[in-house]
Image (cartoon, rainbow over all chains, first blue to last red; front, side):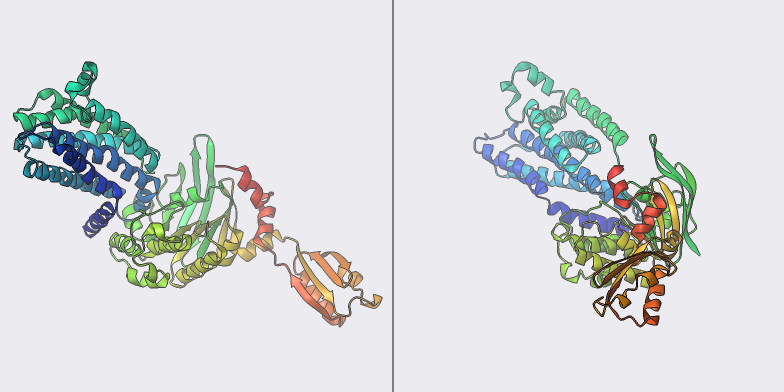
Length: 233
Length: 315
């Protein structure tokens, strides 16, 4: 127990010192503020985009980079010759990144609804969309961490995935302005499904089943693959 | 009492034999060297003993238990410094020690280790900003923070400058003085000669010799050289000692250039020569004896030089 507390404390400090963590908090907020000038009273589009982006940055970019670096540097191996199991470090990291995601999202909600005049989303629908969104993006991150040979390539794959996924999801321009086939394909990507669900949470509070099933499917399949291919060294 | 017993250890990766019936035992309180060129199987053997790898066959006992099966209880009692391991760049020295201390049920006071290993000034320095020598000292400190009975140190001075290597060697002596059994993996002859009580010489996955340093060298009985300068300048023919020295037991060859005499021989020949010089009342200066080294022993034991295998075997 003492070691878990200590591990959590130290990992929290390391996460705070990680520039990537600060970026995941600030970039979505910056985008929200940059476009927030043109926001209209009762907007239901901009916050779902910003929230989706915040979750995706942690899941697709920060999580795999951190975990793959830990493996590359032999930190997981080093732990396996102590009385502490290296799995504890993974668990602590995933929980901390979850806390970071919650912080980033809360920051967006406070600024968006408090200062920019966006509406408050339906609580239940938001919670469901958040849970499935986190599960599917973290599953992508875990699979990247499992497959990438080192931290640098995990980072590279994350960036490489992030931009096309963001585009397809309608995070760079609203789907109405995208070519029809791409907009349809986007609904079946994890970020597209997440943005759509958040949009529902903001507009009428009624979630469509298709995006929820899409996110759940990604979460289950990708995390199973991640568990299958994860290497400790 | 044997702290580690390894019997007939075998390990293959695909078709490549990494360990071929490796056996050795380590006694309590000694510094045990595992010497050999890169790719000889040293690290694989030690990682099996640490419980990091599962051998294909053979038995291992560390402090009486099997490192694979009873590893939790065992991990409390061993300390490990691994090759090629790093810490997160931004972790501070004290945080790393404090964290690793919390893993063990009866850790040492890490503040004391900080002093001991000369890291007190680096207490708040981030890992990424430490010098190579400081990182290495931190790794040794982390290996010892659980107050282990056995410490494994793998290639601990690779990449260090000569001064930092010397300093690290002194610290290993200190660990031994504390009564900790040390298993030292190295591909440096001088390191093993300096630190180890007994050595297992690894070559191509096998233990080719296991003995004390003196024992290894005696067994091989390599040639060595001695030389000196004749004090009268070698001017008079009467002071020419070649014939006299050439007949002494163990002397292989004698050569002379002006006043300088060089001899090559085996066994105890250097003592014979100095005694003969004294009997003949020949005054000599600049007497030099090149000690018999482990280098020669290695060549004799394996039939090839240390460097040659290092370049030839990439695995």
